[in-house]
Length: 420
Image 1 (tube, rainbow, N blue to C red):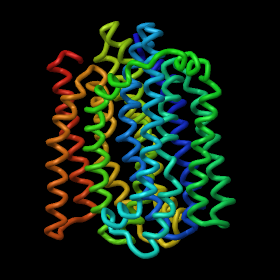
Image 2: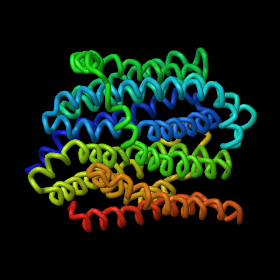
Image 3: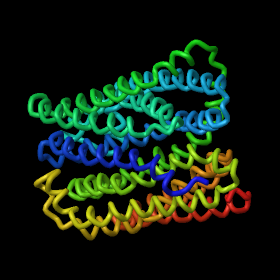
């Protein structure tokens, strides 16, 4: 039986890692923006952009995560090695292609899509170009992290993540006063490179073994990953990028507040992402013993428990955190923060139910349903913008509503397919 104790033993180091990285990241962001709301807005929007593309292009890494977890659980050593080599090859190709794309078209994207201009455009373009290796390093870290996860080794991930975050803070403190926003980007890339080198040191025997065989599963990973890419296009590129673009048109002051709240939301969302990853790792075992339903209930319970423990103090301290990031934010943001957290409260169920279907090869159903729901919600957002009735509240209400509807549909489908 996969009980809560075993789930938490796996998940807690990852939760602590991610929370620690986000909190330390806020300190790094404090130094990076140098008390400028313009820099805060630009860096936050670009971080969201990179996160969106990271999720999109990382769908193939998720494909590897799901496939390799099953192969490892079933002791299919040769298949596991084949999947590993194929995935590393895809990471290299995608990382290089994205870096070239950002260097050439970064300015156009920021100007045309986000409406940036003047100092905001120039600073953001510089930051984006220096961040061009971000996707390649992130994908590599996704893959290397999975090699530790399938072995149930999550404590090394925690320590490497925390040390890399501290490196990011120190470099921001030293470099930003000297070279400005370029220093913030360099700090991020160096900390990511540290993670890559640390993981490589820990798993290099597995990689060397995989590199010695012929790679035959690249097409399989791509084929399985295409619906996952489609899902990320809807959630990240289409939905989140449209969401950010519409939010950026509500004014610099509100955009800065949104930047702060989105950072706080990222902390509260950590358990949702971690426990959904736990689903992909333990699902093959839960299927073997016929306890998927009990397993999923434990995931929901633990995810909500940790999320609530984080949400309460964060809401109460949101004004202090906002002022820490920028002295120019003087508004009381507690009501907006509380509203945002309540509206996004469905997120733990959404992430885990989605992963449940994707891990049981129902990824095409997830994509098909998400297409309709997300397109409808995007259309409503654009209509509100056209009618000039768009607000912060309307944007997040539509966002939360889309996640709620999708969660209900995912769970109903899992029940009808006798997965739970």
